[in-house]
Length: 249
Ligand code: ADP
Ligand code: MG
Image (cartoon, rainbow, N blue to C red; front, side, top):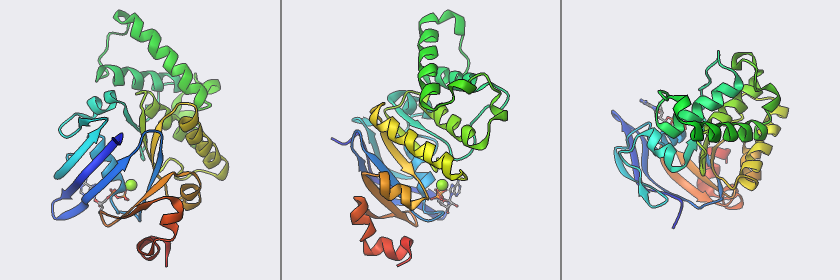
């Protein structure tokens, strides 16, 4: 059984069909990438699977559990995490506090938590926070105000916030967007580390085709809401419909 499966997943916004009958399956431990031009429906697919959007039709199953109708925090509690394309950082808090808040929110489904009455979970959150800050290489900047971080560090903090829910499956929506080559390289290393050291399954949306073809186990290609191809990087590179729709012939 696949870790994640969608069947006939469809999302309409008024008259616009952003996703049409999308069937995907992701196996545990895989790195799959989702490619497709702007407006293809990539973010909509992530938002639908993670519960921010309600699908018009279709099924979503994670580890045997039906996700339709579940709240985003319930889906996060099952082990499905995500990073955001737009900033999710609380700018006035420190780097460390940002990760802590996300970890508490993940555990309790809201920010309204009586920290001191939950000593066990408090200690657990501290341990998880330390692990994440080390993985993300922000441990030396843990006390800095988030707003004062350089761009690449801010984007890695967004990944850290996604990791704070302690996911088994992590969705990453364009994690290298706007990054310098050095920052991009750090992010790719981080993704490889999450796969190898954390044993995570990763679902990546990425516009840099060199990265996609280099690190993916399999690639899904969306075009105007429809999945036009799925396969290994070699299969996708040679796929006529992909070449025509996306890689420029
Ligand atoms: P991508 O991430 O591949 O660039 P999106 O999933 O953001 O594409 O968008 C797919 C299509 O759905 C686009 O035409 C976009 O304008 C539309 N869309 C996305 N979100 C909404 C929304 N909340 N309301 C209406 N239309 C939307
Ligand atoms: Mg998008």
